[in-house]
Each structure stands twice: as structure tokens, then as C-alpha cells.
Image (tube, rainbow, N blue to C red; front, top):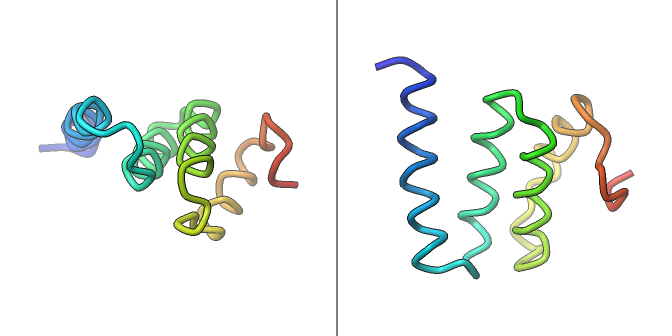
Length: 79
């Protein structure tokens, strides 16, 4: 099993989790991580903001910094 397959499997499981409970912020944060590792930084921001809107207290600011190094926050929330 390679990294791409692992990411695809994690994505599949988390997408199903979103269907079951779209209000669980940690799922959105985990999807942001998957997209970050895939190099889809804009999509990563989208998931991060979804999670932020649900529960800001769970946000990992170190991850935000890593993501900002790749792509500025499209919403301008994190400067």
C-alpha cells in the first residue's frame, strides 16, 4: 500500500463520516490534512474553514502556518 492509496482510503472513510455527521469539526480538519498532503492547498483551506466554523477551539495553528506557507488563506481569515 502506498501513500496515495492510504490518502484515498482515509478520504473515503472521512467523506462517509461527513455524510453521517457534517457538524463534527475534526472530520473537516482531517480532510484538510489529506488535501494538504495531496498538494490541493485550496481544497485544504476549504475544509479547514469548514472545521473552523464548526469548532474553532480544535484548530491546529501549526498546521495553519504550514498551509499558509503553501498558499495564502483565500478567505483572508488567517493573515
